[in-house]
Structure formats: C-alpha cells, structure tokens
Amino acid sequence: MPETDGNARSIMLVNDTRPDRHYGCQAVVEGLLVFLARAGLRIPFFHPVGKSWTTDQTFHERVAQVSAVVVNGEGSIHHSNARAQALAQIGPLCRQTLRVPSILLNATLEANDARIYTHLAQYDLVQVRDRKSFEEMASFGLTKPLYCPDFSMYHDFASARMAPPADPPVRIGVTDSILPKVAAQLEAMKAEKGFVSCDIRIQHNQSASIYDYAARMAGLDLLVTGRYHAVCFAINTGTPFVAIESNTKKISNLLQDVFGDTRRVIQPEAVAGLNVEAYAGWSAKEADDLARFAKERPKYYAALAQAVAETIKPGRAA
Image: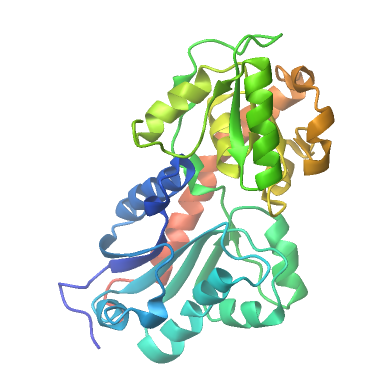
C-alpha cells in the first residue's frame, strides 16, 4: 500500500533482546535505537526475542503500518538453529509477501546451511559485526555484506575509566559463560582467588544502566570472561581481559578485527591451566590497535546509516 504520514520512515524492530536482562543485549538495542533515530526513523513496534512471528497474529498487521522491518541479528544466526531459521525467513516474507524492505543488522553468521543463505539473500541490506562472516556468505555466492562493529560499541564508554589498569592487576573481575562447564570453572576460580563478580546478566537488585555496568568494568584491572559482550565492554572501557571462547567463534572473530590476532582468547579446555596474570596490561601494539579501532568505529556506523537511509527511502511504498 502507499505510505501515509502515519507510516512514513517508520520500522518494526525484530529480535528485541532487552527482555533477556543482559547488559550486552541492553547496550545493543539501546545503540540501535539511537542509531535508527539519528537516521530519521521511528520505531512504533518491537517484536521481542523468543516470540515466534509465525504464530503472532499481530505481526503482519503491524508490518503493514511501517516502511521497513529491521532485524537485530546479534549472536542468533549460527548452526542453522531454530532462531536462525526464523530470522532468516523474514527476508523472503518481506520481499515476496509483505512487500516492504527488510534489513538485517548486527549479525554474526557461522556454520549455517545453504537454506539460511537462500533466505538471507532476500534481505535488502545485511550488516555483519565481524569480517569472518564475509567468508561464509561468499562461499554460498552471496554479495559481501556491510561490516560494522557490534552495536554494544555504538556507545563511547572510554570516559568511564578514571585510571590506567594496574599491572600487576589488583582488582580482577569474572563473568560466567554460556557453556555450563566453563561457567562452573569460572565461578570456582572467583571463589578460590577472591576475584570480584562482573556478571553481565542484570540481577534484580542491580541497576539496568549500561553506563553503570561500564563503570564497574572500568574499575577492574583485568577481566576473565566467557561472554562476548563482556569482551565488547572491556574493549570499549580499555580493560585488559582474557576470554574463553563461546558457543561460536564470535569472540575470536572480534579480536581478529580489533587486534589482528587472538592472543587474548583461549579454548574451553584450557581454563583449568589458565594463568590469569599473564594477560594483565596492554602491549604497545594493543594500545595502538584499541585507539585505531575506537577512531574507526564511528566511520563504519556512519556508512551503515547512509546505507539504511538509502534502503528505506522517504515515499517508498510500504
């Protein structure tokens, strides 16, 4: 149908992960909201993580009232899991049935089958959060998507750090991991060595502010984590870290983009013999890499904003 003033330059945001009560998810969605608002887009409708659009009676009705559908990919599109399939299918749904543009933002793509990429090819715009995702899309013959760092880093948390991290470290923080065995090992390490908790999950008695969490992170001299978004906060606050790889290679992919190597990530089987203090401080090269990455991030977001604006043009039929 033709656009009216009511639906001009408005979108539905799908896979709103804020209900997960996780500082990383909170930072991603808050970053997306600011980014999309600065691009001149309104967001009257949100579709939450974990809610199937196929059984939501209001989904089609709401899409009919907007100019485009924007999907938050985050760490969802890997190994052709059920969520990956559901999010991928939104591309052909929008193109073939609903007749509105679809945009996939902030995605990591890993170990999916051809069916997923057949669907992703129907999206009008795809942006991935690591360059490693280029390779898999190219292997299925798809055009290289845009690259932009994870939207949790759309915020600038550098000012949260009040002093350089001490070396040797005095205050060492620990998060959990999505892998149960690693999570148990990290919990035991924290108790045994007196490390402090820097859990990225939002507890009910804690502030949900991502700036408060960034301040907690910046108060550490070293972080030990099995969480991708905790690594993002560490990079953004200048906090040295050692990370245990997650259920995909997303942490390694991030470090490759930032540092050109994966020295600060270990595999789950290496946790038992981990020498935490070996990762204290930044090398001169790492400090330069962090400064370069911080300087480049706004350029990537600006290029993506232009691509989004060109995809969702004023006056385009919804």
